[in-house]
Image (cartoon, rainbow, N blue to C red; front, side, top):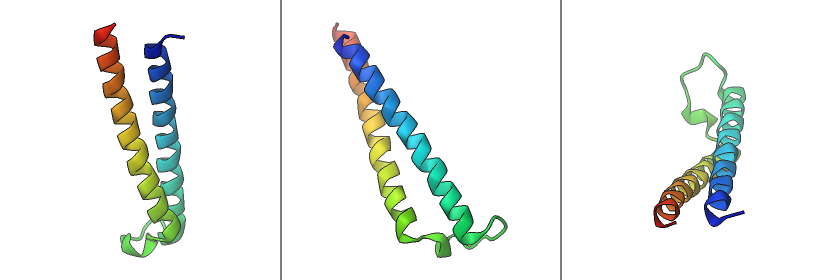
Length: 76
């Protein structure tokens, strides 16, 4: 497996993990506040805040992986 293939795999895994975290966060938030309510501030539980931070981290890792993959692809 080349370095470019490895970076592609890792970036794809980060992207899938990000999708899972965002879906899970949305489900938890809907359960906390209800579908029809507009009061999203009351849905900010500690678990949802943690998932927000995880989502931001995964977004950064996915973006860095994608940029790194492009750079490696250009240099090979």
